Length: 430
Image (cartoon, rainbow, N blue to C red):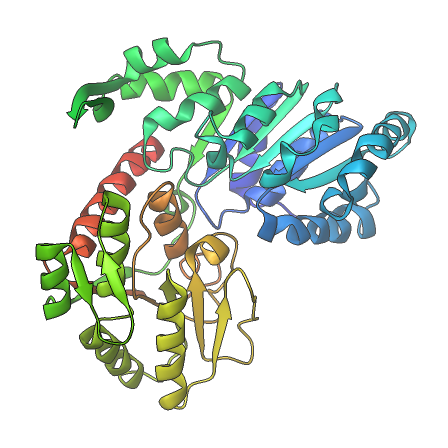
């Protein structure tokens, strides 16, 4: 029998009578159960859950365990296992059957398949639930366009970081909540920006925000409930430690000349901004011998289990080799493998594959950031990654070690990530 916690009960009470809601609860507060219970309350016979690819099986298992086996309530379908043609011809029949069936049906699919399944646009009178709804922040993305074209009767948004660090990215979620405000009016009301000339190309740059209290009030009126972990429970202290390393001669040469030959057949040409950033990050990571040795020193400083976040395959190869040389038993979570924490004493996690969803509070209380995420959604990935160990069930102080090359792209990136976190955290303030 499912027993909801007091804060989950309070949330559902607050959302009574609303059919479009956003449960913006901090990571670890059980949004999965709160959202599922709200789905039951809404009572639609057809329910569509959209989540990340890595979370599809978790949602299937969740509904089967708690809503099929424990208290028969629904039938569960994994749409990722069906071919496009099957979805096109068979899915409408499933939906028709669901409308006439005694039990509701729950259909689960990942974000990147949504726009490839046009049959989903024919759905009506259904409940749409988006897990990690911040993933539709870019309304121009194919998945966002497809979702915004849907015609759900009910909407449930779930996210611990709804803004991905930036308020301007809330607009698409506001639309799903039924807030009839144009993007232009939204920006004029809440976003401070200026136009900057980048070599003849004008680009709008966000410089700040305004009327944030009014924005929070409007979100609340449209079914958004914000909740931070510390408001409902006491979690262990979080301690951050920066380990600063000198810039390597190779990094200095590349920054100065935009080119370097590493002597092992690897040449780096920084012929545009993107490649410059890519190679600068790699020179601060897998090619920085001082950082690799600092990682070795960290391994030897503790016998505790460790979680290590990284970006590039080259980093993983170098880190895995060091871990094995030091007698560790490493595992990895990335796009090619998903090792369980059990049986390992160090877990290498690639951001896109493991920053969301992993529950590692029982495995470790220490995270090493060998390198940091950069680019779209990086603030969200970084915030989510910290919560892999700092969540319900953790009873030890959590330590976060940042291996940083001083006065480099890494230190600038960390400053930007922290600014993005501050923007997100303000929305959660009472």
